[in-house]
Length: 308
Image (cartoon, rainbow, N blue to C red):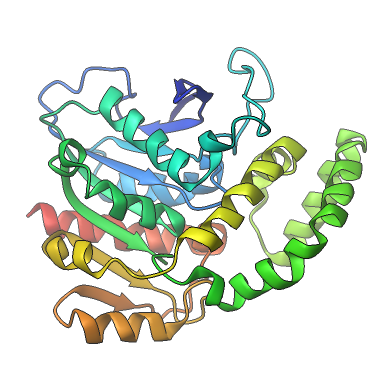
């Protein structure tokens, strides 16, 4: 695995790769796997999932993951760079800005003749669907895999209601809490997060990523994107899904606070022949925390199937 923080759309962005690095020549390799994270968009949470995908593909295809702009700041040199503040740069960190961020990355690092197996998790699936509308990007996309996709009516979901009606009105209180938490010594912050992981059965190898997640500047941008999602992700884009149904695979959760099961059933009613599947294994929306390897094997098998 390789990592760095190249500047993309004016924001130092955490990139992780398995196989070829983004700046290496792909040579005769004409396919890559690219994952767009959900929100929060810290690639560190996707390491187990994507390393499993890479292994499942017999290490034949490079696997890359791009986080959301501003959601992952490097802690130390040589990666540490100045990240533009949220205030005054809102257009860089809202949903539209995050989409432009992915467009710039693909145009800069993916050659025109290389095909992309595009994985989108949660809001990453929404961005992947939007990329299918961009001609020079769409022509490079071989197949899309939308995992627990937040493609519609986010504010109407159970979690959307909690965000918009309960947390958002009290956001100043939450801001005060996580800013005070950030003032604690690193050892105490580490132990608090470690204990939380222990209770919630989150693997301890995500501890470093959890510490980065609790950076107040990062949380501000995560929340800013989340509220914009609630406002912008409304009606399902049936036209784009229908036009591209031969190269889209959707995987819905059976207990997903962001995507009610009825969204899956309504999609199948509107586009009966689309390749959409309902999870029978009770994976959570944040599958990367507890079912990363299992989901990685499934996605790896799907990519092998659609490459054949």
